[in-house]
View 1 (tube, rainbow, N blue to C red):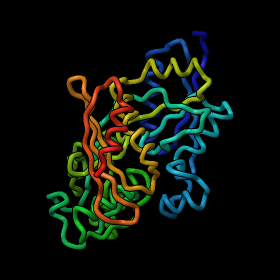
View 2 (cartoon, rainbow, N blue to C red; view 1 turned 120 degrees about the horizontal axis):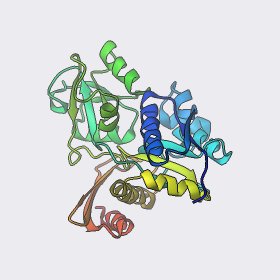
View 3 (cartoon, rainbow, N blue to C red; view 1 turned 135 degrees about the vertical axis):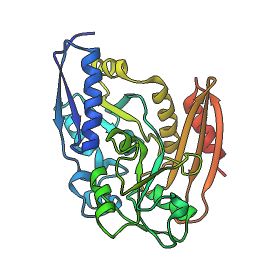
Length: 308
């Protein structure tokens, strides 16, 4: 392929986003030592508007789905200011504009959710009426389903900010965060003697589609960059997250739909499970299927059609 002399990596500026950008850049430099890799930090709508909930940000800014964390990065891509945008894949809209694509993901970290609390014992040990902070409707609905007595409050901010709010303020008894981010930033294994971390089993507390995966978004017509990101991508991760995101697409699920879905690979089979809460309230629909790793989108379709 025709060589370039520089790759411009676009990222958000949070501590976790910069960790993800650095991981991407290290892989790029190792695979393409002759190419200069530079970083472009871009502030997104979701970073700028921390005064209200994510759903309200989307409404007030006219941004659909989870685009509050991707819109400005895509603008930079379209303007040819960057060559690749590095995302937490769970924050990326299920359907992209036609001129963008995500042809690769890095190797996935843990997919599970973590309850961080001021007392040991996890979810069962929280006192009746305990206040739990989260900005995710998926987490909020699952918490309310498992523990109807809990008070669920909106919580915004990056990972260190959320942990500080829990540790130093009286507004929350516990908060929910992603395992991947806590591990990447060094908070797991537990590095805070004043807080307790319970990693929730994904079969009990269903994670988000794409959780733990780093997605690499490029311009669809940039054939050279497609080859570049595919060279550093992880095939098993890409197979699994493609199926999970296809399930969301079939469900027509946005950031306001409480959906948990997870997948695993074993013996050339792709196993998928989903828990979908009606937006209007009520009991969730459940489904589990398995099929060939050769047809991940078909397995996602089977999961969608199996919801009960």
